[in-house]
Length: 268
Image (cartoon, rainbow, N blue to C red; front, side):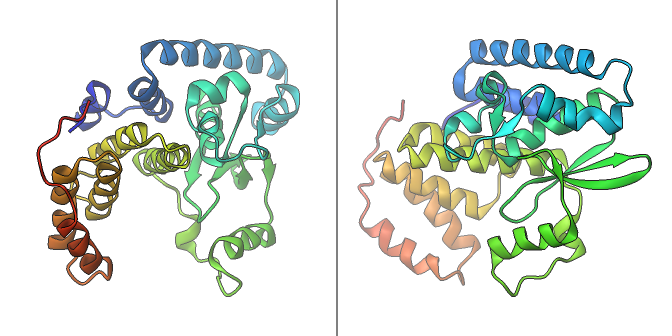
């Protein structure tokens, strides 16, 4: 099993800021130099934003300054790229996807005294920002406030035309939920690029957040299988079967285990 010195402190008593957690992911996956670069870029962005906002009402002008003045934007051309997931690359390019840009937006709002929270909305991460005691839901991909109709359209795009918004869809997420969303998207980007070792590292980090999650153990098993680690894959599949015996995939995994090479292997 891979170990992460960084994520070990996630299990401690001291609460960590959302951006700190996102930078921990960078360090775990790309090394300390990448984290240093991210911190330098973040400091430069904070300083530039402070200059843009000088003499202005922060809550009203933070978003225009950030997206129009400083060029923060969503990357629709290479949406599924790992460049849009790791915060060092997001900060260097000032481009990303909803969850990575959302984490950055939440951090900057809090840094400049504006109340903000993330919303793990189906298919599209959103941010709620308070302006003059009223909350507005922002699309972090564009920096634009969304109407109820636009939010409904996002939901139907993710869940079909019969989907309807409920209060559960728009509830605020805690930082660990947001981090898990970032890690899942990052894992998917690595799998898309067939970088299964890096995807496995994401899975290990997710299991730091929720160690007994059978679905994450199942997904890790698939990654072990891709890396020809049959015994480790079988262990994870068996954990899933034990905890979710009624799940339709349990029988598929039983057949999968029978076809695995269970001889010991070393994973580097």
